[in-house]
Length: 328
Image (cartoon, rainbow, N blue to C red; front, side, top):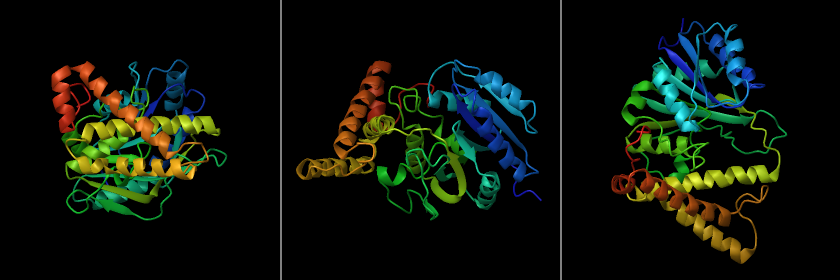
């Protein structure tokens, strides 16, 4: 007997992954098959690839027992691609993962088990483990404790929300999307703000009163391929820019969410006096770097908002909402 008869859409945004996308899709198909019988589809958004990614997906789809929807979205940006997927997907339960990740065999089964017990929409994610142990130990989350909170029961700050659920391991019902709207296209890989589209969506869900939940048994394996210190530094630079932009977006609407920036400033001052990197010495990224790039992200956010639509953009930024674009 199936755990849940809700139609499921697994969404993957991809770019220039012709030689590896089949491995990610294989893991999705295997996880879906493990939860069979199930009404499911796989939605792949080719976000302007310059290689043969679309052709690779088309060839792979011929042997897949589940419907595969391939859409080419030429506008760059992870948020743009995910929004295109939301307009394309037919499922009532939506799963987001990345093209360098692989779902565990039990992932879909566990997701359906949790979803079947929900009495309200939940934004849920699970553990992210290294797929290749020679990669830097970054962009992972291996906590073994289930964590669940919402605005009505638990006050939260930026640091307790960001990373609670990762964009490469994120699931929600369409009812939640219909309430929150699309992803803010100013954020995310491929945008000028470089990251933060998943964190922004978590903030919005939290502020609307939805429950956020992390469950360790919904696992994806991340083959991110970053092995060298400069590459790790660049990644955290982008994360910090996105974080600063989120601080700017929510500063006036929910200032308590931005308190961790003050903590980072204090720690950066401590670094100056002690002469040590107290944040991430493995990649040479310190609290001083984190604060500086967050400040840059905040400045970028306001300039982007001003250029988009001057005065309405300022008013909406102060309210913590994006300007009137396709992102909301």
